[in-house]
Image 1 (cartoon, rainbow, N blue to C red):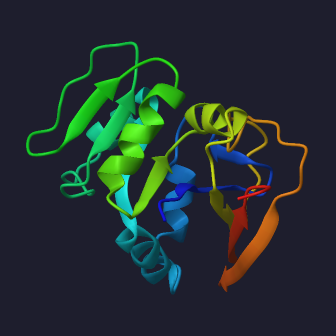
Image 2 (image 1 turned 90 degrees about the vertical axis):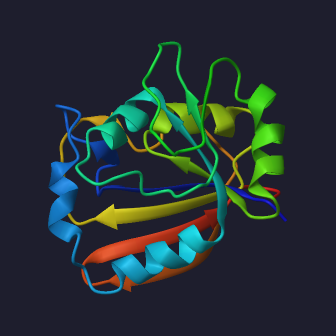
Length: 178
């Protein structure tokens, strides 16, 4: 069964990027023992991805080549952005509901990964299209920045898993009724 998942890391006070929009604070945790294995296990079940334009631009600015292989990727943007050679990028705009079914089909029985910032993810939450949250909590306090998940969901989510990787915490929740 295809699940739509948000896999992201943030600070203890709930920010994915600092007040300058930077993620370099997170690099100090790149070598946490077991973190790579946890990500690889998650990514093995990913059939396609969706991200907003800022996340896509962040990926464009990385020194490494496209890290998502041949997995289809929907980039939600109202602006024209450059494609990445060899990557299956689908630039779209508008309501996430109009694209979700196509993403699930393209995932071919695997999962849809919502990558990056919370604005796009908040739209999936608002339309009850998000099945799981995979959150990494880094032991830092940023004091402001880009919220990890700027959405509201009053019904309680169900905690499925807690993993400690040194001082880094991984939490997995399922959405109410999913």
